[in-house]
Every structure is written in structure tokens, then in C-alpha cells.
View (cartoon, rainbow, N blue to C red):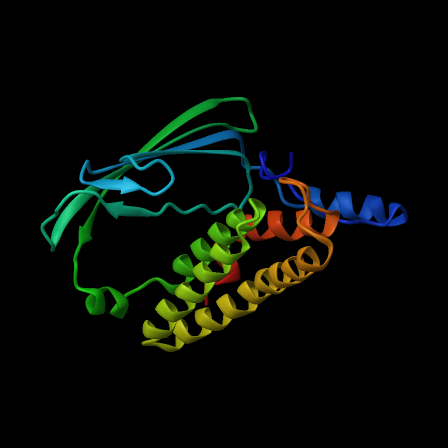
Length: 222
């Protein structure tokens, strides 16, 4: 339920329950029932849908809510050309008003890897990797999740051209190690006791996965 509604998972002592609730409620909800639709150029395809359109049902949104989308080229494209993206947000404000917001932007596309890595946004790449790997861990794809973290680590290493890049790389290492350590522990337990049924996770696992799936930009940005 927490995962579907962008909620919070915590393990609390009943004696401290009031403090935990107060802490959770300290972050005001900016919007509810939030859905985000992203539409790209027809020569591009999002990895989750394999089409040029992707829909994310976010639920509740606070100041710490950040999401990312991954896409690929599905048809030959000319480098150095601008490609159009459109984001459509629909949500309910706290006063009950129904809002639809549309943002359209053109972004450059290139096939020059070195040129891209000179100007990467390390924080966004790091955030996407942790969120995506947490999602794979939720489905029990621990090997794939760990490979994704290692691949991202190498990208960030190649892109360390400034002090800010270096600090954001360290932030990624700190957060990814939390997730990777959890996955190593689960893999070791499953090797000894056998694999858990699909979708079955203990309280600690649920807390780790939900927190990492909701990792926000501020955790990585320097």
C-alpha cells in the first residue's frame, strides 16, 4: 500500500508511535492522485513500455517526491538534433481543485559518448539507478539490480569532471551500498534457507525497498 501511494514504511515501537506519526505528517502533501504521462518523439521508446509514451501513477506528492524515466532510440536518429518531450501532470490540490499541467521541451540528442559524459547530471543518473535497482530488488531480481548499480558507478566515475560530480558520486556510493548490502544479505539467506515465495518480504526488506524506490534528488545532489 505504501509503495502504490508513495507512502512511508517504518518499523516503530508502539510506545514511540505518536512520534513516528508526527514525523511522517511533518512533510505536507502538495498534491494527491498524481499521474504523470511522458510522451517522446516517435523515434524514441521508454524502457518500461517499449513505446514513446510512459505513464506513472504516483499517488501523493511531497517536496521530496522525484521520479525519472529511461528511454532508448528505437529508430535511426540524426545526432545533434533536438527531440521533443512532453510531460502531462494531473492531480488534486489540497483545496480540492483538479489540475492538469502540460510542459513541452526540446532536448538535444547525440551519439558522442564522451561529449555526453562531459556534462552528465550525476545526481539524476544516481537517483534513477537506485530507484530502478530497488524496483528490480522488489521483484527478486537481485543480480540484475546489482549489475545496474555497478554499471551506473562506472558511468559516474567517467563523468567526474568537477568537485560537484565527485561529491555526487560519493552520495551515490553511500546510498547504493545500503541497497546492495541489503540484497547481498537476502541472497545469502535465500541460499541457506531457500528462496522466499514471490512477493513475500519481511518488514525490514519492505522498509529498505520502499525507501530506495522513493530516493529523492536531494540525497544525491551536491
